[in-house]
Structures are given as C-alpha cells and as structure tokens.
Image (tube, rainbow, N blue to C red; front, top):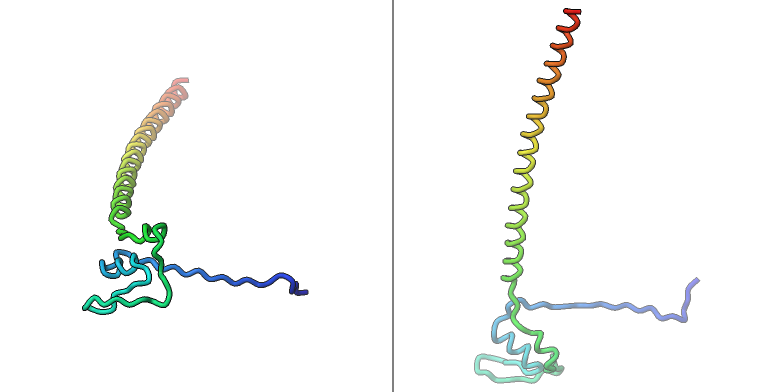
Length: 122
C-alpha cells in the first residue's frame, strides 16, 4: 500500500569550507556578486549574487587551526602526566604487595615452625 497524498521530499545539503583563503579570493567572497576578472582589476558582475549581507559576510573570516592544535597538545601533555602518575602509583602498589606477600610468607613459616616444635615437644 502506498500513500500518494503525502509528497516525497528529497533534500541535499552541500557545504564548502575555505580554510585560510588567499586574500583576493577572500575579498571576492566578501564583495558578493562582484568578481575580479583579471590582473588589470576589471570587474564583472555575476548573474547571481553570492551575498553582500552583513550577517553573512561577518562569517567569512580567515580561520586557522592553530588554537585547536594548541588545545590538543595541552590535552596530550595532561594525559601523559596523568598516565605517568598512574604508572608510578601502580609500581608503588606492586612493591607494597610484594612486601605484604613476603611478610605473610614469613609469618606462615614462623607459625609452621612453632607448630612443628609444639608437636615435637608434646
């Protein structure tokens, strides 16, 4: 059964991101539908406007990823420090566990020796 009263809608979304565009290209984006045609700075109108709206043009700035890289390096350094701290704690706990095992074995041997002396004397 097919419902023909509801239309089928197919949408497509495309996005183009310009990271650090060249100055001349950046300016052409800001100028909207006016583009620079050649080196003699002749201008030509496009058949359609790109956008000259201030609300749109304020978002066409040059973006860099330097700050993101700095944040990621700081996070990596933090995690490496935490990893070193946890490894040191594990080593200390392992050493303490070895000491407890040794003391337990010594106590057990001492108790067995006392029990053997008591059995031999009694």
